[in-house]
Image (cartoon, rainbow, N blue to C red; front, side, top):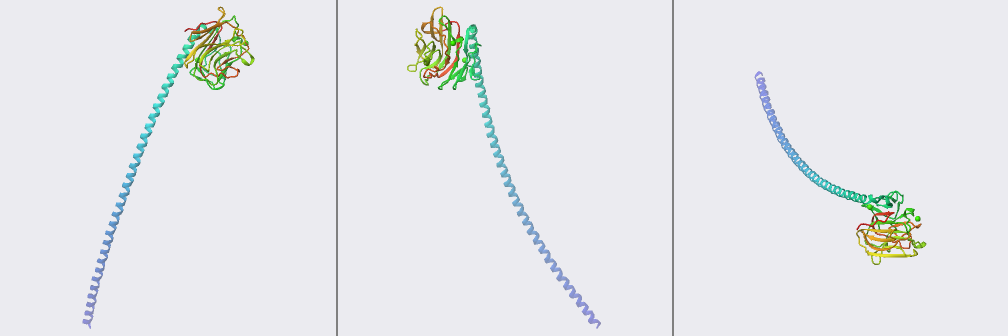
Length: 320
Ligand SMILES: [Ca+2]
Ligand SMILES: [Ca+2]
């Protein structure tokens, strides 16, 4: 029995050993599975890395494009600013030139006026319109009241639209008898147009509606463009015109001179005498009109510029 027991124990040991070997082979199989899983994981990681690289490249390209666009915009802005700067410089140069011209004109006018200034009874230089009037430079208060669309440009008053004119109210300063000497000087430019009928540069005393004929003035005949000096006839009961020369569009000085001692009334353009008649009585209640007839039917609208009007209480023969 002891032998049988020993044999049985030995058999159990052998069986146990065999069982142990079987467990070892299962463990080996488990190792193989783990290794396979690890390899798959590595592959997955590589794929992820490749995807990230692509994304990074796209971002870089997008940034470069943006940068290029900004550079282009910056260049355009610089060009615009440069052009603007050049335009401003040109404008400043023009302004400077105009200022110089104005200064020269003012100096010339002042120099011409000085010797006879005390004899000016009414005068207007048309440098500005203030509160609806052009101031009388004589100090006598004979201001010219402005109507219509008259405006000042380069030291002249510009007229042209129907109704553009100036009015100086009747004043003793403007009344001259047959025994008074006086001078009326007008520097003006006609622009070649007749807005309605004869163009009236200046009229003192003619009023057809009231048959007032103690007058003198300057017109341009609209049928032939001849400059006409107008005054009353010898009986001072009607009109008389003295043709001078065909008008052009330049600036000219029109002068009417009454010399009481000589008993003459003479008409000049730029110092050249075109006609003469006898001295007359110009004491009247009429207003002085500049740039139109007054209420004489037709407007007699003047179209052009007037630079200066001076009235002296002495006879001054104009310089040629
Ligand atoms: Ca009067
Ligand atoms: Ca002027």
